Length: 414
Ligand code: CS2
Image (cartoon, rainbow, N blue to C red; front, side, top):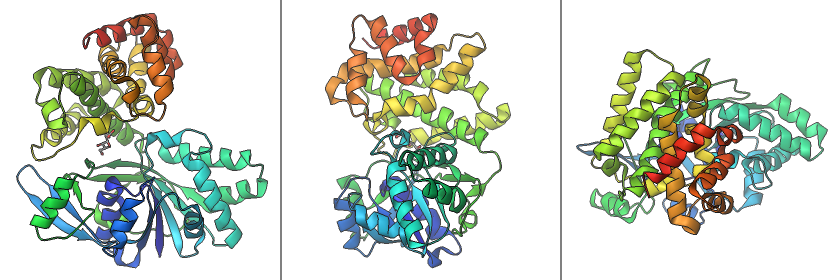
C-alpha cells in the first residue's frame, strides 16, 4: 500500500514519515514523496535508497535512527509523475506539508495540483483516497476540501466535482514537532555518529499528531505510533496555533529586530520572554483546557524553546508572515477586541512584524512580498500600519485604537 506525499522537506521526514515508520503496520506502507521545489533532495534520497537519519536532539544528548518509509522521491516539478502517482490504485492516502501560503486560491495553489491529480485518478478508476493535510492552518481539512471542490467547479467539470464529493476523504490534523531546516553541520554530525547521510534531519524529542474526520480508504495505524484521533480538533488547533506558533512568530520578529538569530537566544532575552508571557495571557481566552493544563503546556513550550542544543533560526520562522499571522495572531486579536479589551499583546506581535518588514524591505521572504513591502512603507507609520493590517484582516485595519496600539508596537523597534 502506498502513500503519496507533497512537500517532502525536513518537517515531514521528522513527522509523517516518522509516524509511519513507527506504526505497527508501517512495513506494509511505502511513501512516494514529492518536494515543494527542491530538485536536490530527491537525488540525495535516491542515492541512499530513500533511507535517511532522524536525530532526536534533546537538551542533553542525541538519539539517532534510520527511517525507512520513503520508497520514492520526486521533484515537485515532475507534474507527470505526480499525476501518475496519485492515480496509482495502490495509493490510498495523500499527505501534504505545503505551508500556510498554499491554502489560498490560485492557479499555483495546492488545490490546483490536487485537482489535476484527482482527475487522473478518477480517469484511471483507482477508487477512493484520503487527503491528510498537515499544515498549521485551523481546520486544514475543511479549508482544503472547500478549495479543492471550488477548483474542480472552476474547471466546469461537474462529474469530477461529484466524484470528489463521493470518493475523496479529507481529514483535519494538528501537527507539532519543531524541526529546523537542515544544515551542513547536521551532515557532519551524522557522519561523526557513523552515518553517511547527505540528507539528515534533526528534530526535537516532542512530537504530536492529532487527527479528526472520516477516512475514505485504509491508512497506516498511526495511532499505534501515538497519534491521536479526536472528535473535536478545535481546542487542540487553537492551543497549538496560538500558544506555540503565535509565540514563535513573536520571538522571530521581535528577536530579529533585537539582533538575535535563534529561538534559544530569543527566549533567553528577558524582555522578549515577558512579551511571550503577555501574549500567552492574551491568547488564553481562545484556548481550551483548565488553567493547570495551560500552565503545563506553557512550561513545556518554554523548555522546548530553550533547548540549548537546537539551532532553530528565527529567519526560518519569519518566512511568510502574511499567511501565518492570520492563523496565529489575528483570531486572538479579534476575540480580545470583541470583549472590549484592547488586544495590546496581539498589537505588539503585529507591530514587531511590521517593523521587521519595514527594515528588511525587498529582502523579505514572503509569498506576498510585493504587497507586504509596499504597504509597510506607505506614508507615515500610522498609515503603513493600517495598510499592512488590511492585508491580514480588514476589520482590524478599521479599528482606530488597535491601529494606534500596533503603531506603538512598531515604534518599539525604531
Ligand atoms: C514555526 C513552525 O516556522 C514556523 O512558522 O512556527 O514551523 C513550528 O516550528 C512548528 O509548527 C512546530 O510544530
